[in-house]
Length: 423
Image (tube, rainbow, N blue to C red; front, side, top):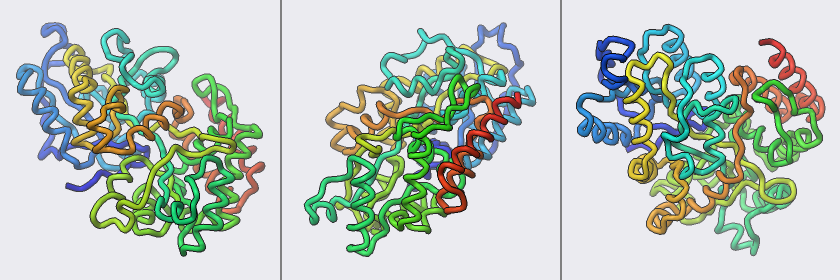
C-alpha cells in the first residue's frame, strides 16, 4: 500500500483505478424515477484503496442506485480542468464531484454545482471552520468530506537534548532554526515553496498568522495591502535571506519536503498530517524522534489554511436524490471513521478527534483538531485559479530575493485588483 501524496491543493483524496469508465446509459432528467438511480462519483486519483470498499458497501445496500467511481489524474490542476470540461459539456458524465475546498466558490459561481438543503446533512456534527469552505454567497453548495490543516513537525530528540520546547512564536522558530539546526548539521525550516498551490497555502498561512487577509466579500474586495501581509511575506523572505530556510526548499512540494524531514535533514517542517504517517514508517530516519504542534505566528499560535475536499452535486446530475443520499452516507460517523483508519485522511466529524482509541492510533489528532479549529479557508473567489497563481508568483519572488516584501505585497494587491475588476 502506498501512502497518498498530498496533491497540489492539499487535496488528500484516494480512489480506486477504474479499468474503464462505462456510462450507465440511463436517460437524463430523472423525473420518472424520483431522482433515484445509478450515478458516478468523480475524484482525484490516488491509491490507498479505501474508497472502493466503502462504495461497494453502498452498492450492496442500494442495488438500484449503484455508484461508479471515475478516477481523474493525481494532479489537482489536471483534475480540476477535466471536471470543468466535463461539466461545461453538459453531458452529465459526473453526478457527484469530490472537489478541493478551494474550488467551491468557482464551481458555485459558474452554476456547475447545485445548492443543497442544510437540514439534510450532519453539519452541526462537523468541525465549524470546515463548513465555511462549503458555502458561497451564504448558501451551502457542498458537504465537507475530508479536512486538513498544516502543522509544524519538529525534531523532539534535538529539542529535548537542548532543553528547549517546540516554538510557539515566529521569533522562537527563527532562533531555533537559525542556531540549533546548524549545530546538528540540519536545515532549519521548510514548507512547500515551489511556485504551485502549496506555496499559495504557505504564503496565506504567513499572512493569516500575522493577522492579515488576502481577499474579502467573496473575492470582490482586495485586502492584502496591509502591515500584517507585509510582515507575513517578510517572515518567509527573511528565512531564505538569513539561511534558516534552505534555498533547496524553494523547489519543495509536499513530497520533497516530507522526504527531507524523514531523511533527518530538517529541524522543522510545515506539512499536512499525512506526513506523520510516512515519518513514523520503518524506512524513516526520524521515526519516534519527532512531534507535531500547531503552526506558530508572530506572537503566539498561527493560523493554518484549510485543505481537504467537499462533495458537491452537479447541476446536470441524472439522479440528484440518490446523489444527496450518497453524500449523507459518506459523511456518516461510520464512513468518516474509515476515512481516517483506512484512508489516513483527516475526517470532518468533530467527535472522532476526541475518541481515545483513535487518538492512541493517531497521536496527532488533538494537534490537528486545534489546527483545524483555528484555520481559515484560502481566499474565496470565482477566479480562484488566477488568484492562486498571483499569490504563488509574488511569494516566490519575495523568497527568492527578487523583490522586497513591501514591493511584492503592493504588486499582489495590484494584480488581485485587476482580477476583481475583470468580471
